[in-house]
Amino acid sequence: DPIPPDNMHAHHRGHDPSASDKLISVVDLKGPQSGVPDKTYVLYAETKKIQLASGETIEAWTFNGQAPGPELVADEGDLVEVQLVNKNITSGVTLHWHGVDVPNGEDGVAGMTQDAVMPGESYTYRFVIEEIGTHWYHSHQQSSIQVQKGLFGAFIIRPSNQHETKMIDTTIVAHDWMTPDGRSIPALDRDDSFLQNLVEPGLPVRLRLVNAGNLTRTFSLNGAPFKVTAIDGYELNEPGTVTDRLLRIGGGGRYDVEFIMPDTPVTLAMLTDGKPVGRVYSKDGDSAPEVLEKGEILDITQYGAPTRASFDTSTVFDRTFTLILDQTYFGVYNGEAGQQWVINGKTFPNTPTLMVREGDLVKTTFVNRSFADHPMHLHGHHVQVISKNGLPVRGSPLVLDTVNIEPGETLEVAFLANNPGLWMDHCHNLDHAQKGMTMHVAYE
Ligand code: C2O
Ligand code: CU
Image (cartoon, rainbow, N blue to C red; front, side, top):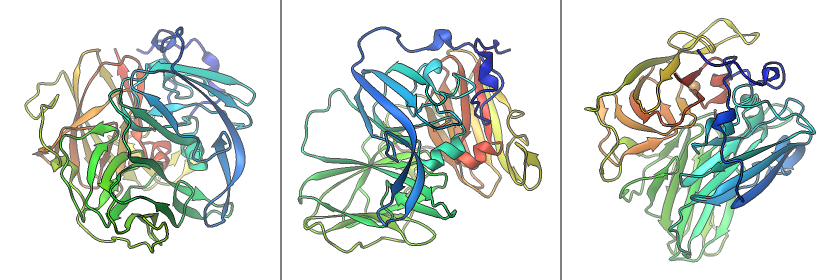
């Protein structure tokens, strides 16, 4: 059974309703408390009006007055120290490092690994970074509300062997902003149309696409052959060049896309129910967008060249779990009537807790019987996708922190239990997480 908390007041003060009442002591599960940090950041949480490129004004919740918050850039192996200061977010704030496997005590889940940081308070996170790539951070207090309002930003970790190259390296964060009158506006950063970018032909371009929205988004790149070089920050092995493939990124997921700038313009687009939004790269900085709207979806389970994977369909696992993702149509949950999202027929906290021991090889089989995508995000660990609908993954090993399971799909994913603590595993459509689709992984 989980150990009772040291800070009992976590229960009634700033507690993420999608987090649990099962608290453990995280005192021994913190990052290094001494040592001079390689990178130091201060993030101030505060309300602020922001303006989208179209001129629409949003009442946002920001870090340092920006939404998305500032992009944090660190190097592999850095000791990072981040001070969170809450200026005026009355429900309290935390920071979760999505995709970065920090010690449990630094994971930033309100009511579980810490108290929410209330107005006038501050909290310091310290951890050593062990992975590279495109990640993000966001508040994990009332996440479905706070992330929607803007309390998130990109977190980029450069490999230690990266030499200075002449490369355009940009991060693009997709999100749905909400106007005061309740309209949802899909945008890339704050650009809800097509932002123009001047790029010299011949230069390599890396676009780090972060989906910080709830819905799966389809992206297209028109005008240059490209490669998907990393997914969820994990570099793919010898990714192939493609031209007309569409990319589908679930909520919380990230794709790195690279191309060489041609003489002619390139259009990146995010397709939406209405008008697409995107970016145009051209040598004159002023070309009409040419959006690719149709194409085959890139099958990431068969993409890139095989290399030795940690797990495959013949691995003998210490623990296996089957998780059926589904919906209900009626019910009352968190005081609200309506649809709920269930795991094995239950809403959180009655969903299963996956009990593991340190060192276990764990397999979870996700079966999606509902009509919506469910990007399942496991905190503190990376999972490798072994099979999809019974077919083994044949390409580069696919190592993810957020696994999107589409309606009707069955995905087997595996991980090594190597980061003790109490962790969340939830749908990163945060409205689904809020309405039941949340569970825990706990170490015995
Ligand atoms: Cu990115 Cu528990 O979340
Ligand atoms: Cu979901």
